[in-house]
Every structure is written in structure tokens, then in C-alpha cells.
Length: 194
Length: 255
Image 1 (cartoon, rainbow over the protein chains, first blue to last red):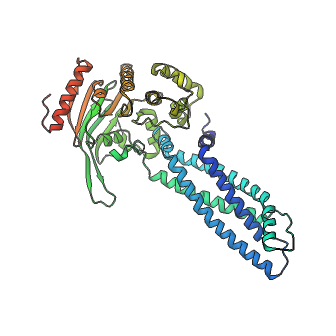
Image 2: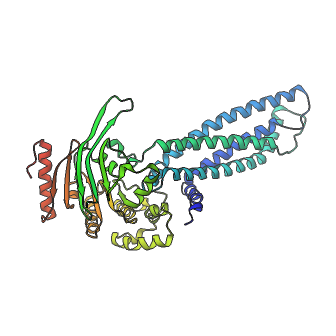
Image 3: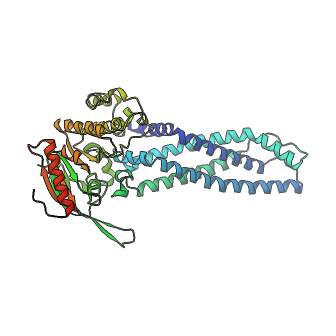
């Protein structure tokens, strides 16, 4: 087997095998990314009239993006640590059966790249789809007399990519640190009886 | 030359802030010849698992030396460690440690996959092994679909497929019922007869009586050893129980 292609393939296989947990995780990433994208896009709405009322709207949306960002960090970090606990045995076995920690780190890196790519792209697309719906809802609640057009916000896409890229990178770093300090030691079950 | 040479092994565990010190191994020395089948017995707390962890290069001794095939395993760098384990050691665990998300065949292939081997070669290596272990017809199943005995036989296949210098087994019969245990121990005997060196850590007198030699560990020291020699397995069973009784009473061995 080609060594270079081995790690990306293994990462893909790992995600598929752990699909039971990774599909919900991916959906979570997409969902929060979509919410964040919508909030950012609304905050950066290009065609608002210049009255005080609409200025407030932008401010509130900015607060909203901040709240969503904080929740996304907490939620995804927690989910990630749950997933890694589930995979402790798997990763320990890789280590014992002959995969160096460095190589495990490479595989985890590829897994994160896949998750980030699928999560961010999927999240932004989902966000665009739901944006119109969010606008309609907003108009109704605020009894606004103008109609937002559909627009794709470049700043919102970049903002979403940056935030979620950063969160997933942060999670990856936590995971790598955990792998570095952990010793497989007959895979933890026996350590207690030592 | 011995395959495995352990000399004056000492291991002290220190709690994180340097408070309590526990001496898990005091002074352990023994050697294993190529093709031998050795069992290590001892009560819990005697240092068995610590010893196994050190032999598996998962833990470092405080002092002392472990030579495998003339090479000091404590000197191996972390980055080469995984490759060393992969080529030299086979592992059998008490609770199997098969991955539920992999079919049994993929579980057995795992060490070869990690070594980057070709699928064809893996299949070639698997066939005779699966035949010997009697798992040929369950290879496509998943671990949760088969019995404990079958799982452990697959785990043995995973340990043997890399042709390791030595197989380390930690309580391999610990989670099996008596019939599955007997079958597994017979298989270990067969594998050993085929020239494979086996080192087993166990509580079970039955399991230990299958080995050619039994080492008794107490308070971090090798307290006694019994060669099976010409004894039958039943006779050896009796000798081991007697030794354990003496050990439990705290007396000196006279075997």
C-alpha cells in the first residue's frame, strides 16, 4: 500500500466506521455553522434603510452572532471529548499494535480536515437555504415594511469558515495533547488492577 | 542465547506529587528461551501486570534491564517503539480488545494494515492461521455476533499474524467459561508446539498447568519456579496448587 495515500484513506475509513457517532457530530457542526452564517449574514445585510430602528437590528444580530459562537465552542468541544472517550480503546489498540503516536496524530489531523470541510461547506449551504426563512420570520416578528432580498454574504462565509475552522483545530489540539500524555498500558481496563 | 532476558528489574510508582512510593517490582530476574511456554502466577498486587507492561514496552522500569533478542527494549526511542512492538510482540488481552466497528477479519488484519502490507499478503497469512484456530467460517462476522471463546481465538490470530518473537498474554482465559478456556489452552499448547514462544500471566492454576514452566511472583520478586518436565498436566496442576498454598501461608518453598 502506498504510504502517502494510507493516512488519508485510513482517516476516511475511521470516520465511516464510527459513523454512528460522527454523523450526529457532523450534523451538529453543520447546524451550528448554519445558524452562525445566518446571523452573520443578517448582521451584514447590505440594503437596510438608514433609520434608527434598523441600526438596532444590526446591533442585536451582532450580539446574536457572539452568543451563537460561544455556544458553538462549548457544544462542539464537549461533543468532541465525548467522541474521543468512545474511541480510546481504538486509538490505544492502534498504538499497541504498531502505529506510532505521530502516525495516529496524522490520521486524526486528516479526520479533522474532512470534518471541517464537510461541516463548513454543508453548514454554509444549509445557512443559505434557511436564510430566506429566517428573514421572513424576522420581518414578521418586527413588523417590518421592507423586504430583504436574497443575497450571499462573502463576509459571513469567511467568518463562519474562520470560527469553525478554529474550533475544530482547537479540538484537534486537545485530542493530540491527550494522545501524547496517555499511555496505552493494556488499554486502561487493567491499569486499575495494577 | 535466551530470547528474553530480564535482569534485576525494579519498578517504583510514585504518586504525582511525590507523596507515596509503591514498590511494584523489587528485584525480578528470569530468562525465556526461544520456543518456551512460560506462565507467570501471583496474587493481585504481586506485580504481574507491572511486569507485563514493562515487557510490552508500555512502561519503563525504575532500574534493571530487559533484553529481547539481545536488544535492550528500554533504550528504544518513542518514535521507533510502535514499529518495534509491531514486529516483535504479539498481544492477547483478557477482554479481547477487538474493535466492534471492524469485522473479525479486519480486526485480525489490523496490525498488518498498520504496517502497510498488501491485502493479498494478508489473506495468504490469514488462511492457515484461521484454519488452525477454527475461525474460518466466522471471519466476516462482527465481534458482538460471536461467543467469547471465538473472540479470543480471533484475538490470538491477530497476535500471531505478524509472526512475533514472543506472544504476551494477560489472563487470556479470564473472561471465558471453562470449555472455551480448555479449547483456548489446547490451542496455546499447539501454537507453542509449532515453535512460538509464549509468555502468559494468569491467576488460573488450570491455565498455568499447560505451560512448560511456571514462575511465581510474590511482593515484586520471583519467589519460586516449577518446570513441568515429564509431569502430565494433571500432576502439574497439583504441584502448582501446592506451591500456591505454601505461598499463601507465607512459608518458604521447598519444591
